[in-house]
Length: 485
Image (cartoon, rainbow, N blue to C red; front, top):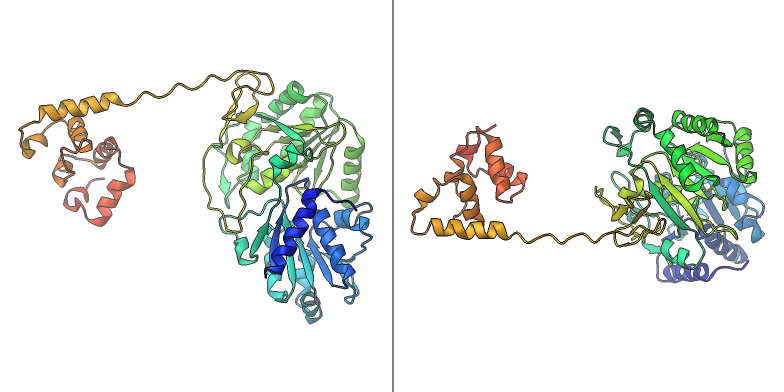
């Protein structure tokens, strides 16, 4: 099996890390880079040396399917599933993480897990793998494969389980080298302000209600028709109800569309996926099914009919459209959840770390094209979609007026004593404090009859609101501020 240059480079980097003493290493490869191909080559090499190998995943079917990365190495693993009773003396296994975890109450399975030379965790950023580490032998090598080594909030840091991170290529490089499609990104200004947050994520039911209230589903179809009519499309929705609203609107407009969710039985899901693979302009709306482990290179459009605070989820959803084919070198992202503005463009370079990320809010460095609605980097001066030319923002004028006022007030108070200066209007006192003529004093705050007025004056000095609160807590101006409400 011929590997791409960067895939060989990743394998060499993993071996160098192991030789340096790292037993647990993260393999970071973007969606579409072939991380399964990379770790399958490592598995094949280990099996050739008579080593015992376990691959832990939540998508067994994709790893064991005919034509997949394992089969191309002629590897036929024993499957550990809910109903299986496997022979525990073989060399290669692939198992569901929850199934293995449940069986670790049995001594036989504890000894079995302890016996492996190499363990692969597929989608290693997920928390579900954490509970297996205590049963792993210290001599066992572990590769945590993921496109998004990212944890935040209350999640356990990856640095608790891994000591090195290998990343040899990122999304911009893969696009530049022709291994991934170039996205064309558009967004719809959905109002997210009334959507509730639960456990650090936009609540699914709340999203559905607000999207229905704003009739966003009509905007989905309208913009699809305008931007990429006829494109083979995956739609990501927060709930079954939302997905069916999208489906109904597409069908009402005469499009060939279907719905997929986890409540459907295995046979129905299989039939829907087969229909999608074999239908040229299919539109498939799904809920929590196709975010990882689903490969359909012919997908030409990703519709995000949901908002998420999770960067990994955002990248994985968009990545479903990133595969290239002979006839597809670009794809569309239609964002109806303000995701790109929160997480940056999908094709932006990412900086990954084993350390947990601190949650932060902010607007990503992108801007809207006023002509066509495309999202582009703030540095772009001409829209690649419609050739609209962005005007350079005028430079802000220097704040000379305030400086002149400070000088003027300084002249007014020449020769005056302190007790005379503090009787001046508060706006002039603020200028004198900022100009270094007056020092901050509790006597100034003696003039305020309410906390709001004291706070207004504090802001005029350029101080943050917390400064005044801190003065109260520390006892500064206490006799003056303690009764202000």
